[in-house]
Image 1 (cartoon, rainbow, N blue to C red):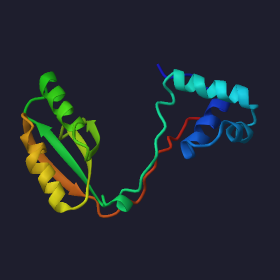
Image 2 (image 1 turned 60 degrees about the horizontal axis):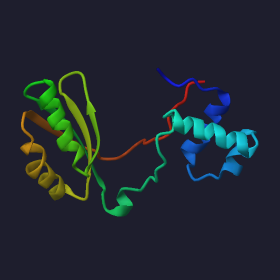
Image 3 (image 1 turned 90 degrees about the horizontal axis):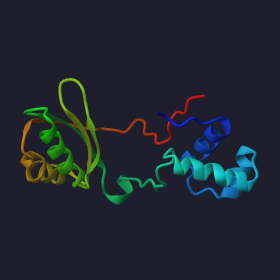
Image 4 (image 1 turned 90 degrees about the vertical axis):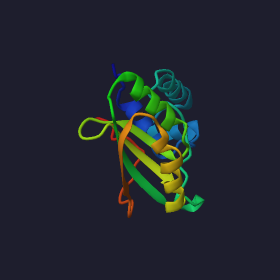
Length: 156
């Protein structure tokens, strides 16, 4: 069941989704609370799993990872052991940024980042194709990232 939050919690989440390094004092000023109640609300959001963690977003191109590939994977059988085995294997790969179990024509959608096409081929041949139970893999290369958001559109 989703956590029930009010408009003050929503404002806190909106601000910290844009700047997780904001000080508690500045956050309190921005949302109209004093620092102590603001800190308690943030702690409550953390304790209830609404705020999972704080991260730094790194520009992939700036660190030499300009290639994004979306790979669809179909398994031979959609049984629990096969799903678990596949998921465990891809979670161990640092180049797999996202892995989603899907409905429809394929079982998984992966978002993979690599420095170049040779690295993707190496990932594909040395790792992905070696996972037991894969029936097919189809890769699509991103030409340009048009939009990328990390802030969730919180309900009003």
